[in-house]
Length: 343
Image (tube, rainbow, N blue to C red; front, side, top):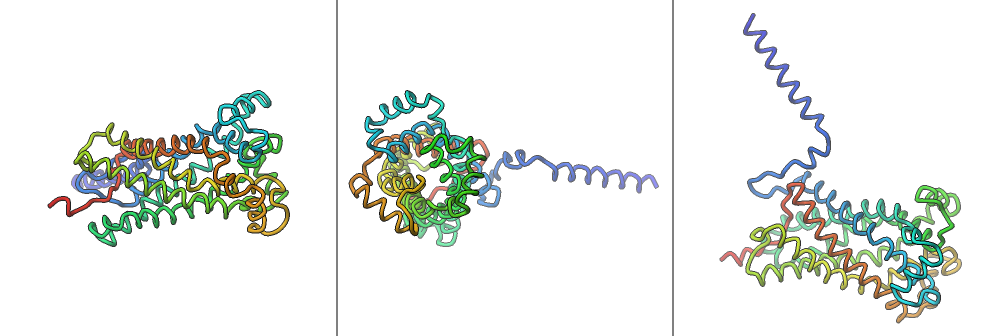
């Protein structure tokens, strides 16, 4: 009997331990370190990548909301806001007060957390799956194509979630009296324009974000690999400070390149979400009218300088924060590897 009682006690202790572990907070699971032996790219790795992406995008876009407000005003009304970035800040503050520079902050933080979750998490998923399918050498030889495919696929998914929030943000920036906060903006747009209002800018946002994201990841990855190559070291052979520094430098270069590539579509996106822009008709007809009214040169250059400042800073911050958060979560970031360099 004593043996039976002792056995039952041990079973109850085990069950209690298991029950406690299964009820562990999600934060503890997310913070659990990845296995130390070998690199495991499993569900937890992708979850950590998505979380890091959401954090880095929401922080950087949120911090640069004032710059984005001025940039959007310049794109929407270049005749009035014609004194450059600093002059634009002065105009907005003088006419509406400093708080006007935070217009759309809620939509920006929420929208870009969701977008960053799917974008960075999706890029990690697609590029790792491609690399595992092709094998190490073929993946290295075709890493540019993998970056482009992974970035395009992830960005498309992310933009389906971002577009409604971006529509509300741009409407709020173009007309500060339109809504009292994010929730009010959603309600008003849903009542007056329906679901179509939230996705009026989907085509231009895809035209802007997909080339932007492809350029961002291709250029950043290529520049970072070049820096590591010039040092004669692999990413795992440098300390955390050096790794973040390389991410920041390569991020600035990638940000400026991707800003230039995607700027015409960004201008169209800002215009098309302004009430009445482009007149009546289908989305392509409205976009065509807006493009003709602006002209190709202005489409490519109006607001470009503040956008390069914004995107260069933003992209550098994103890659720096992403690498830092991934490290803090105990994940070892995936890097392409050239096996022939080992011989």
